[in-house]
Image 1 (cartoon, rainbow, N blue to C red):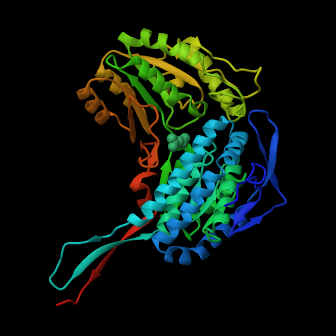
Image 2 (image 1 turned 90 degrees about the horizontal axis):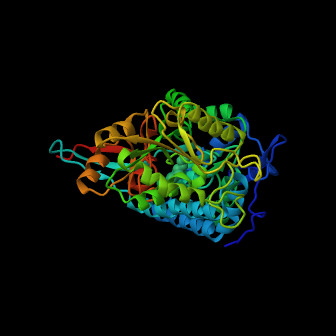
Image 3 (image 1 turned 45 degrees about the vertical axis):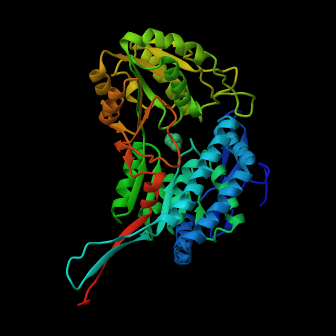
Length: 485
Ligand SMILES: O=CCCCC(=O)O
């Protein structure tokens, strides 16, 4: 199995049907830590996207005809190849996305874990034998791959958000076209190269980087060959893509925006709450859909909680992803910095108090923002209503459990929610009352290949990971056999 350097894994053309396809028009991928161009990537248009869909369509019959064991074996080889190249993939991801190399290596492992998990799950797809409906009939259900799938993936997790979709699709016997994000296409192209090296057949996985999200997105959501479309990104874009999928009635999975509450009750272990909040909030500099967005602390413990949180936040080291011991890196681009600065400034003018941070770290570069705590935040402030996607802890308070849960649920979103508490009855009560797809109790890190990832309300439809993740790429077919009398 080839072990690469970051440079030898840096592919910059479009990957269709096992071939690397250059284009005259190319776009720059830049390093957010320095602003420097890393490379120029081929820019797919609608015609190229259609070519990719046709390649996936051609590859489908022989891929779905393989046994689950054969598909699982190839997926396990891909998993091993990714792990063998963990360092190179982490360096590449850190360069294009900004996260610290150690965190990027963690994402590479996390991303690979979906491939390993679904390689195994491929062999655990069962149908059902149904109760008899008549003496001369027997009925059963078989599970079949849905067909050609398409995915549009986000820049914040350039590896894992691809493998979490591709691995179950391929395990189920589907083929796929992926449009990776314009800001971070290199991780996607690198894992496609490894898929090719381990023998994933041509056309089974196709990657179409593009700056033309609108038209390439249109092909992937309207092409009649595509039977399933999956997206991770904003709720606003997810709604548009879902509508586009409606004309050809595609199955969709949508992993959309969150506005996660993080409740701290008066019976919580406050040291543990601080530790878990930091793990949750500052992962990827806060640019994560399951990041705690609203920290809601019981009034009676808020001062003690902030006294513990402040020094821990001030110890966090900010810097370029390739520097030693960095806790978080730059934000992805100037728009992200502008948004975070606006949310912090308007919160203060609306009455919130700055505990620490609150400003850009311009001595490090253009895209760094200090780890920030705001207190006395109230529910109507923009910092509460919007997804911050930055390193800002915004703290409001509640009087009792009923009010805390009501505040947590007072949002159109319902992806993740977190709470810290000690009382067992409260733990059951609150976890059942929170309106969300995932709950962390005394735990700020909840993502794992075994867990079902996804949201309720406007945070999306469908689940990724877990045994449910494979179902999203399969159809149940009822078979009725008559004339048995
Ligand atoms: O922004 C959403 C990415 C999800 C990361 C995870 O799997 O925890």
